[in-house]
Length: 518
Image 1 (cartoon, rainbow, N blue to C red):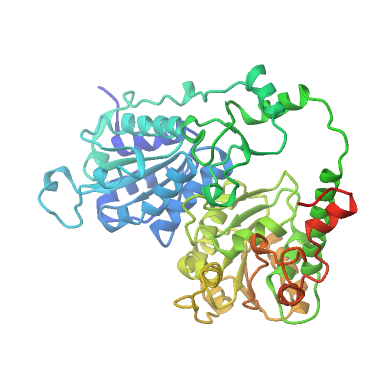
Image 2 (cartoon, one colour):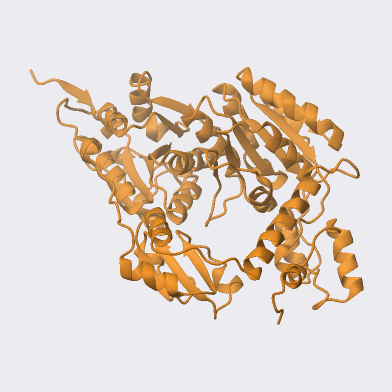
């Protein structure tokens, strides 16, 4: 007698063969038989019951960003499927292998406009590099395997639509298939000697390494010499006229550039820029250690830096918190951080924190978000409590969509549509079953952050609602400090607004090091 296995269980065993340890989702009628398979496999594959499919989808993408291994999320037919779009597009735009399993009505009801029925794989054709509907039970584990291989190969989202009846059917137990054991990632060599030498001959330049920075087209000088080192041929020359384009492994190429070059002589230009960077870091440190006046965001980051462990994980949301984290977090190279890069999905911080804590249960994990982003996903604070994930959530509450507010100011438009209600996030957190702390004064920060760290050590999550002023972070792209460009009153007003009394324009450092200023 031939031994059989349910197709849904075989599909999950395929996931397990690829090293998947947990999947995110919310059950629905069209995913019931896959849920029963998850119940059967619960000792080998952990089901994370999120409060919103979008959170599960973004968490799955963050799994890939933080671990390099494929993340998996699912949704039932109809609304469960459409809620996965944010994750699918985030995976596409940040080039992260991710698998999304989508429920579908039983085959006998398909194409009859049945309850919650949508023609789902065409919906994902733009977001995903692979989207297929399974047509036979025997092929279900094969299609799962194919989708994972495609996701890794193309570095993006793969979608598998599963009619509910197929997962319950019995198939031969030795019939499912996995190519996990043969999986390999192409390894690019360093750039050639000729390419590296050509790059070394360029003097005043911009070096673009493994980046697809979209604002390069408007923020970089079109006349600048440009070197690009990239593993993806689609992005070579995409953002700027490129003088030397190198399709190669970036670390190996940079090492080769060092090996094939001589030390440059000390120059006034270089030293002026070293001093300028020191001055910038001094400004940030001054702001983070402020103890007077109303509470701004910088002292909060100062406290985060103080308690952050050497291998902390920072899940950074979208908006002002992104640029502030880039400027102020003192990362050491062993810590990890992630955000929604090219797609810039508000609300990505909490899902990424879930992924970080699930994948690295012994590491310290921070969720850093503005109040606008936090309001989008705060229901999944419950997921942190439910699965005993000791995440430190820090919400920067300024009652505004700050980044958009700044853009409206730069456009010369009055502020409109950017205000946020004064949500009591600490009370929301308490209602979810975790410690919630409201901080309104700088001198309250130390105790709050230490309570959060003590809770983390005890395996409990915490939320700190930092009520900060709605003051704009210093716009480094619009500095008004140089007396060669601005009058004294303009400079004085700029310094007062941004507490920049000790900031010095680059031109002053150039003068100090006797570099001619045009």
